[in-house]
Image (cartoon, rainbow over the protein chains, first blue to last red):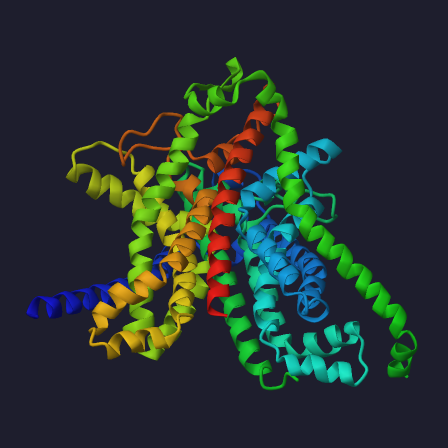
Length: 282
Length: 302
């Protein structure tokens, strides 16, 4: 009897320790990134393009990568919405009667979600060599868009599927067609969920490196045109870190801090918008 | 006016919207097929010149001499994934049980926040963290302790970083598994006189076993495809790893590291796309199996 009690309380404490351990690691990661990056972060880091010999320790900043990342993430998220939004609404309004079909499309979305970005990158690279295309901002946007649209669709679908079925029936009985129900009622009603999914996809697009390495290329300049190559923040960190010079490495840590702050801000904005807007949604 | 306008054209708008929905759904079905097809077509030439088994089972890697053996990379990828799985799986199972069975409600809320942020942190940040923390720790503490000289960029560092990265994914799914279990199961077990711990051990774990396996399977497939973070800490040496502290060279790192010069050596790009194809197939298998288990489980409760 006593042995049983000891076993139970032992495991209970072990489980508690493990759980608090995860929270500790989370705090520790943020602490390390902030502490190491804080020294070398400066205004010129954010506001300047890399100057000659940037990777040898000369002056400049990572503006090219910040702007490139934002261009790619914005374009990719818009692309993901253009493809993803109709699919989610289709699943929940038009096809709601056909449970099997909806199930298999959701299944397909889950599979797509699980394909890693390196595979998307490799595939895009194959297509680009066939079409004789150079690495460009546009290619990066399309690749990342394909990569994040399952993320957006799954996140938005999770919210839309909780919509009460009665709403659909009521709208039908008032004479609305599927398109009106989709965009005027379902979309509007789930706007908070849409914004959360949008920002989730946006954050993922900013942080992804493996797919843009093939498709967007790298440059020291802010891209001016869709056919220009574009730098991204994760790749910029990666290249700065592979330099043997200490001051360049320090700048890589600063860039990492910058990227982490961007991600955290997106996450906070998404939370605030969600809680603010939730009350006013239809 | 606008309302009238929309009303007048509502059937046209309806048709356009339906057309666009059709295109999008077609696109979703086409995308995985075309990824698979593209990689297969690109790697066909190398499968014609070399036998499949010699590509997979040979460890000779020298692209300039035309030797393409992927064994080192496959073994590295498998070792990394298995090791990170060994680290992450118990942590996630323990923590998810604690969070759903014992923990106060606020802790679950805090954990959801932690999971969200951890899952959102880009992999390159985990890589930087690994370089700052894990690599020096291994070279300064672990390596002298077990008397094995190592640079710190090794299999162990890669799997630790990988484990931490996959924790939010797996944990999130496991919490879902335990929460979707009907409460009556637990109540029935308790009413028969089982203690809380016995209920967890013999009822909940057994009942959730398929969900747990599926969540872990999805975690494995995520870990297999993870690129940048692992690449940064794992050492990337074309040598068979024999020890935890030896450097390794997983498939995604191989693809990323060589994309620059793969056009200049004959067959090199084909070989790299072949390794991408292998990775794609393994990940797809894990993914499909795990998702099938999850979908079965969902049906059971509905």
